[in-house]
Each structure stands twice: as structure tokens, then as C-alpha cells.
Length: 561
Ligand SMILES: [Zn+2]
Image (cartoon, rainbow, N blue to C red):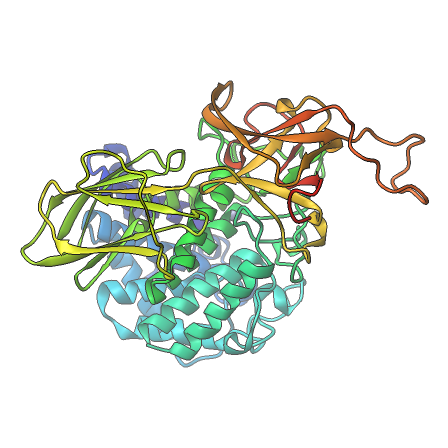
């Protein structure tokens, strides 16, 4: 629970970066840091459970979360230093990190079962320049896979301790732990110029996206151990897809984007952000999902839980994790290198990089038009690079055009449109992405959704909720590749949104009832025309309980099944 306070402090650090006058945030941070400074032991140790219980330190690192809490505090201190310039938390973090270096550098006394200390120590190295922090992170990365964390009761894979990081080819075990570790692996590889280590992380990322990731960007196919499953084991109804795993995957993908500049990482961040992550929060922003499946049946229960968003959790990792990502969203929009400003995510924002300042205006993700107005430019040429998401079949690009033009430009293989020129304040670039709704089909090896399709529009994954359908959701099919119709509506519980409808069929249940059939081919859909209607996945479960599905069975010849 220390970590939940620290994640809240981190969120405050990032929030004060953009809204410095928020007094209640500064007051909470100041009083919490003052308390932590008082209770930190003279040698730098800090952990409420161990200090209050009197249990010995570091006796059960695999499950004590001592380094995990340290890591979240160090990251919070870095956020407060960067966001506000205040060094009070940083003083505590440095004492804590120095203590860890003294206790563990060059030692093999164990490993924390929950990574995050790795990214935190690299962040502290970036902030202070103290190489011992980076080196300790590198040591922890290299030590994993040698049995130091051990068998947690779920097996060694649960803690990614079954194989050294450099030898692993696929993600296994607890999804949040695996993905926090990967963010640390990428950080260490980047800060030590270790291309072999970076390449193993990139290969596992490719494998994860190809075979272990839901359409919504979620990870974790199994409730048991909150873990990754086999390759192509991606059940929509039993998917775990913890909110924290989406955040962890976002953090890892960002680090790979920084390390490589490849658009696929920014694409994946977008998929997570608008779908698997955004769905965790209800319309009012006060209820949360811990688990984010792609299907909920009408009679769903997990133990006594009906699978709706809740106000809080006994293990409250997700809500403060949501806060720290939302509070830092402005970090992830753009990067600069040499004389190029690259914009990776589109949101209304003021962006500065490579000495170029621009205002970005857009109604993304609803509308595909992005207007970029130059507000400040140096003498000489600068390059503006704009990502074209993989879902946008075409792109339009104009510079200083008086009127919108429908002119399409070729998208280069790396999917960044580049404009190099001597910019003037007032120059205006307009990017047009193709938001036409589209059908998406699964890899046929994903047995759980074979014969199904899903609807996407721009970066948004859609889902079918019972309340929008004319018949029971589990009796409906859609015409594969059928025409999609969009409609702007205002729905109670959701507000303004864009629905997408498709032609479908109705397959009433067979009588007598049995969950199988010995001699009947599947019934053809009812002749009656049925329309199936979808809403963005992130808006589901805001209109009461009821069935939901992202993947819908398809019939007909219009597309691959
Ligand atoms: Zn969580």
C-alpha cells in the first residue's frame, strides 16, 4: 500500500507540471514527504510494513514488495523534481537508493518478485548522473532468471525467473511484472548502449503483439496468476487484461519508440490508450475496472463479482496507476532529435521541440483532421514528422492551403510524413487521417474468436452492448465485410459518441437445448434483416449491466472468416 501513496505522489508531480497552482496537490505532497522524511531510518531504509511490524528486512524479497515500493517512491521523487523543481522527495530517494547500492551492489541476496525498481533506478540515474544507480538496475536485470526470486507458488515463470532475460523469446507469467521488467530492460539497454539486450526485448514485444495481445491492447489471458497464456490463447470472455498491464505495456512501448523511432510502437501506445486503458474508467471517472475482458455474458459472475466497474479494490494498484498515466499524458505526444520535431500522438496541445513551437488542434479520436499551426520558428530549416497510424489507409497533407483539399499523399514505409522547410510563425499544416469504420479479423490461430470479426474506427475498437440490439446479443451475427454505417448520437450514461451499425442475422437457439449438436450443420441466420450496433469499447458498462462483446460471429462471403 506504500506504493499506492507513491503513485499518487508521482501523479501529483506530473500534474503540477501542467497546473502548478493546484494547492491541494502541493499540500498533500508536502505533508506526505515531510512524514516520509521523519520515518526514513538513518541508513536510508523506508518501508511502513517492515518498520511497523518489526519483521526482518529483505527476508522474503520475492513477495515482500520492498524494492517495488522503493521503486515507486524513487519514480515519484523524479516526477516531483521534474514537475515542480522541489528536491525534498529527491533527498529521501537518494538516501534510499544509496542504501540499496550499499546493500545489494555486487550481491546475490535475492530479487524482488515485482519489478519496477529497474526503471526507477535508471530514472534516478538520468536525474542525478550517478552511474551506480544505473549499474544496480542493470545488475537486477541480469540476475533475473537464475532462481534468485524463485518459485512463488505459481512457478518460476510467474516471476520471470525461469530463464535469463537475454535468453527469453516470449512473455510469460504475471503480466504486470513481466512488462514492468521489460520497461527496465529497455531502459538499461538504452543507457548502456547494449543492442543485444535491446534486441531481445524488441523480439519479445513483436511476439507479444503477434500472439499474446488482445485487440484492445490488453495483456494477460489467464486469471490464474494474472498471467500471459500460450501463444494465441486469447479468450475474449476470460481475458484478464489488468489495467496495470495496459499501463505497463504503454510504458514499455514508449521506451522502445524512444530507442528506435519506429511507428509501430506509437501505434501500439495509441491502441492501448484509447481502448484497453481508457475502458478502465467510467464516464464520470469514479469507477474502475481491474480486469478488462472483451466479452461479458449476461449471467457473468467471478466469485460474487458481476464484473462491473468498482469504486475501489482491496488491492488498489490500478486507480493510482491510472492517475500517474493520465497526469503524464503530455509526455507522450512528441519527441525531438537534431532538427526534427516528431509528433506521435494527436491531441490538442502546444508542443515545442527542435526549436520549433506548434499548436496542435484536433477532435481526435472522433475526427481524423489534425491542424498544426507554427507559433515560433528559428532561422533555417526544420523538419516536422507526423505519424500516420497503420489503420489509416490513406493520408492527406497540405501546407498553408486556404481550403481543405482532398489530395492524398503517399505514405512512406516508416509511416512518418516529413515536411522540411524554413518555417514561419503562422504556417499551417493539415493532416487528414481516414476514420472510415472498418472490419477487423483475428489471426485464425486465435481459436476463441475464429469465425468472428470486430469493428474499429480510427484508433477506437468497438463493442456490441445488449442495450443497442434488437435481439439477444448471443444470438446475433454480422455479415462479414458488410457495409458499416456511422451515426453521431448522445446516449444516456455515455454522452456524445459515434455508433457504428452493420447488417446482421439472427440465429435463434436450437430446440431441444443442448450445448452441442451431433448431426446438424449450424443454422443459417434468420432471413429477417437485423442490424447490429456497436459503441466504442472504452464507453462500455456505462448503461447498466448486460452482455457485451467485441468479437461477433460473422456469416456470408463478403470477407475472410
Ligand atoms: Zn492493477
